[in-house]
Length: 167
Image (cartoon, rainbow, N blue to C red; front, side, top):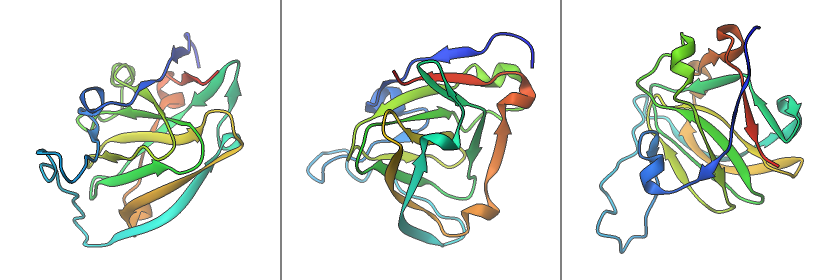
């Protein structure tokens, strides 16, 4: 792998900055409640608690290395860190992550516990991974057969891995 590894600093999660990747649930009293819908092409919506550990990805000085992202084209996904702050990196669903230029649109967000977000169908994602703790527990709503719809974008193969600042 040649070139320089790009470092990205996570930004705060808010509806405007998250819009290219999905949406944020709102209170039931919000006039926009119901404007968005979850979508599961295989009618296999499933709820569980999953987790990610820091040691699943390489640690770098002041951060974590993002070497690959995944996407699901058959369903939306809802995630919420339950116990500790975390970071997620995303790329919009309209890119294929098959060229270095596609990786330029990757953005990272800092997540507070109990802050839910929805990934649109086809949104590339890495994590969420814990900022400082060893692991993060995640409330997860996604297709039960997600492993059959789990496309991988390999940033290392593209020569574009990213370091996500967490410290």
